Image (cartoon, rainbow, N blue to C red; front, top):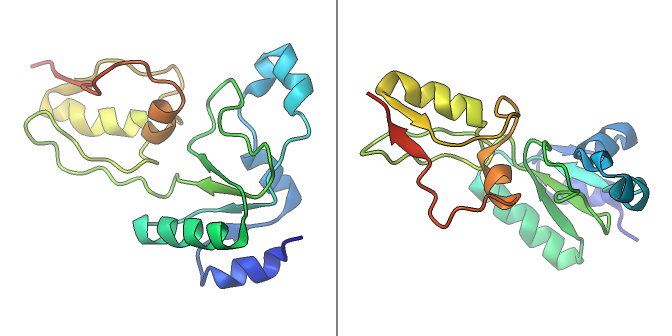
Length: 164
């Protein structure tokens, strides 16, 4: 059994959450849209949520979880509908929303962090004459990392298009 206070301390200041109500909330998406999944996943929850602020912290969390054999479930905005980012085996929910950088748009290419919200990406690009070609109805809260990891089906990720 993992000593979660000791585990959090071993992360050296990377933000952690252990409050059961908040952990349960961050362990959920809209899985309950499906009556089947509602029954199967209603008791699923992590033991801790860890919210790294940069790539180095992501690496450290994964390194520590691997060393302790702790399950890791990566999570974005939590707007999915099928339990894709729910921690089936407890452990750590790796909340990537702090990795929300949006870089400079150059030649129709944009580098963003996994936690960048789709609506914020489009807001940054539109004044420059670019827009997203496709996005979910939840674009104000959905992250690009979750959008891609949650089942985006295009062969190439060429979602910016010039509109000017």
